[in-house]
Length: 401
Image 1: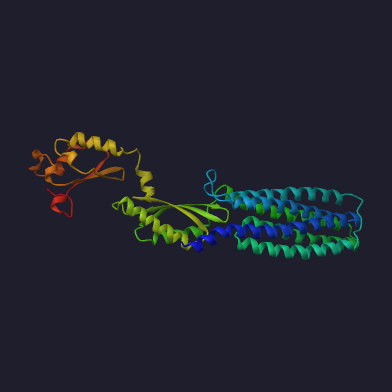
Image 2 (image 1 turned 45 degrees about the horizontal axis):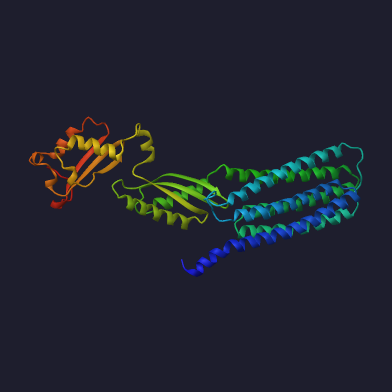
């Protein structure tokens, strides 16, 4: 990555923060002005629906302030306490915002129901229609503006705030309908309109809160996207299969854990390199995936879980057992450390001997050294295949004495 790319990447978060702050401040000022006018005109011209709509606008002001604070926090760099970043502060803010909307809807609905049953229903005045119309036009404009910015910077919180603005526009339409009906001789329609506003606010609040709660409890990405990721990973050279995929959302992106099965005979470094190649392919194929953690498996994971009833001995324990049983046949001080393969509930052993001089004289003339080694370890329930290789004879396969 060159210097110019570094500069662009370092400036991107600041640019996103400025865009989010600008659109939110515009919406905040607009919401405050609309809230004041709605409440005043609603009280002066007998429209509880418009008063409820004004309270809804004031809730938008509170949400705008919360968005400004939480968006800034969510765009901070990862630190020791938050190694994956701070994006979930944005998610938390969306949950809080949705919960506030639900609570507000309940309060508005309760008051509206009480007014329906009240005998003191008054006829709204024509200024109610004017203020409601202005609210519809202005809130629809701020909705499209905020939604465009939210999608551009990939911020669920800004998108959620845009939909909050859309609810204000919809509720103002209901105010117009209720006030018009009341003016035509049905005064109870204004209170019914307030109930309708409460239902809209509650519905959007519920979807907003629930969608983000699913992120907080690490709900996986859609099945179709997981299937695509599996296909991309399995198409990587060296990957035999994908044993498992686990995903969770972090802000607008996904974090991925994937288990890749490779040839059990490859080296650790080759297995890691296969994983690195698969990681790059996954990041290129699905832009929503921000980070991939891969695990290299030597065999099928389900087979491992069903077969492994006991923990196999460690390298040091295996080496001690082998030296105790084979020490008079093989000079372990003149050999490379044995290569161990932990597969199918067994430990297979490969011995790499520099030459036949690594074998004690008493064992060199034996018909089959491998047979002797197997015979001396047949009491070990975990021992698997045993192979011997001699470097000085340039053998291409195991010793077949």
